[in-house]
Image (cartoon, rainbow, N blue to C red; front, side, top):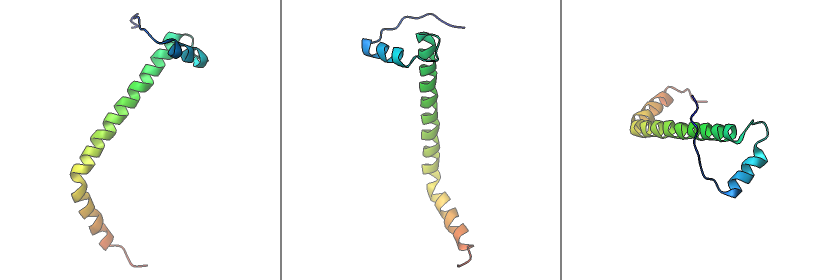
Length: 76
């Protein structure tokens, strides 16, 4: 379901949208695609932040495990 809304944009932003609108059927389609892309980027950043937080919490244990695995390595 689509919801009609009104937004205010600067002339510069509108001119840039018009310059790159290309394959899109309308400004609305262009802006919806841009918003979806940006939202996906925000979600990805949040997942990466959580993953990094987990890695940082587990870093000491992971480093100990890596050191242990290296003891099994044969000399070259």
